[in-house]
Length: 140
Image (cartoon, rainbow, N blue to C red; front, side):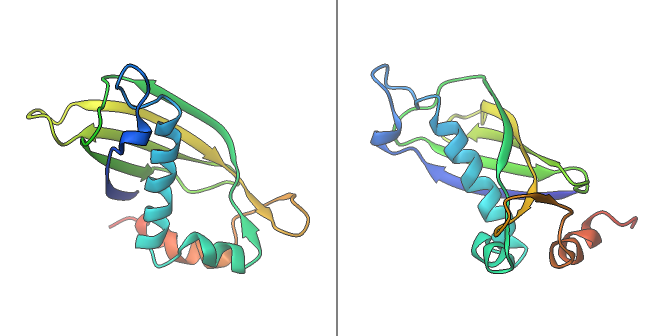
């Protein structure tokens, strides 16, 4: 399983009139988690694009558990539990590190496909990607 932890501090601009993090921001936080996961593997998203591929989101879901507020420090746990075939799901758990109990703020997933940049058509995961992630899924 691939797993990465990122942190982000809630900006004032991320909050709504109720002083909660605006619901749509959580999808942006998910994006932070997945781009940092790729970067931690030595594969920043820019490299994926340079290789001629893109990773569009084809489905997303967020469950809101507890509100986050301005200046809270959030931990984004990002996990890929299964190999892509060709679609794959990335799971997220966002915790508030400012609260004593590190309360879960939101959790959810995004589903992705690899597409060729030129044709915008789905394709199997490219070899360079599989070569990087396969060791995380092989029996130990």
